[in-house]
Image 1 (spheres, rainbow over the protein chains, first blue to last red):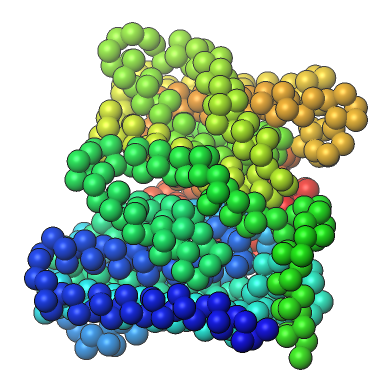
Image 2: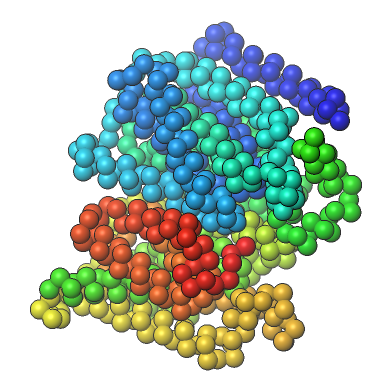
Length: 336
Length: 292
């Protein structure tokens, strides 16, 4: 079984690795500010969407809080950027983001998905208001300047490195015991708990890892703005865009989100340049089109996504070899 | 006097929250639609009344009377057009939950975007019945009292309809046993549409009331939705009485926090309550049906 899996996954892995190398060399030979800026956008969404799908794909919990972590990362840089060396700043950001994710995860991930959705739905606004409150009342500032000696190219390369790291993590996860446990949980939580998998701990751990990456993206991209305030970095559009991209591409496969990132980053770029006032209306409309009208990609995906959360549907599907192959294989390996 | 001030503030807020949350509990508990655009519809209603009143077209009281039937019709159409297809294609209740969350999340951005285009992002308000009324030695704005009164009347009405009428009993049956309701002659499809529309009418009415006494902005919808969701879970999904109690409780907590701690921390207080519920009473204060 293992060799079959490696064969199936290694070809795309090689293609992705080659693409990453090309993207790393590109800014050296092709100096174009617009292309660089587009590349940064593309990479930031690629990391965010892949990190989002890393958690939401296997667990089927919809997270609406991407921007909460992204903003925590950016704000950490705004506060500590000039006081600590850069790697320390990034480490602090990851620590803060992970701590937040750990708390949210512990509170919500033992319960059914809807509590998690609700909690993450308001989380960005909560963090934004808390940061705002702290800045106004304690530090008496309402915005911060980020003056760091980090070029746009450096941001690009850091994001590229992050993308490589998040893809590697996702790729490794699918082969590890943790990934196996996750797939069993995604297919059937009751079976997973009977196998001795600690469901809550596994989900919380994954949420922490995924959120850590989101926080890092916010931190790495922060020097791109020279001025930061809570309304800028905790922008709900970011959560929404990431959700759209990941769903269009499909969070089930480790490369799925990347497929959604490329066309949608280009589309959103086009929309924000040409229809800046109508951006969120068009964003919403794009999303509705995907939810309703993309029957192959997203609709099949959603059915697969929610199938196992309903016992009736799962038993119906159980007759199909396709549906049983994965949990059986997973079970066999988890029991070893 | 401080007590009167807090009491009136808490009851006004609680009454409006009760309307919004009852709307949500009907939509989620009966119609099974987790509506994340709920608060946006409320804010949009507030802005429409603002525009009409500023142009001298209608008085907010007339608007309130019109808002309930118009809101009902609008939300019924919304359900039939946008959500009924999701209900039809859903393979399971869980699939419908995910689909409805995604679709209404998209709707949220569309409505908020339209309000932003029409009115911009700043806070709006209008002067209507702003004169003070003396209660127990405390000056209270008449519009606030009026809003509180209307909220209480509507809440009592909805409670009575759901408890004592055949129609309301059918809705509660659908909320409690969605798979068996059809066995006693309830048509789940049309009943779900009616429940969704009724919930929608309540939130549109709440929007009109809110516009009378507090400034509102385009981005506030998320906050109202969040608070309504917390109230619904606190009261137990589909539990109308629990919903009313939880709304008043949240109204009190927010008023106290705003008055004695800091107005900037009211959302944090809401989240703290939510956190407590998640940790200790995930089925709600009154131990209602589990959310699944």
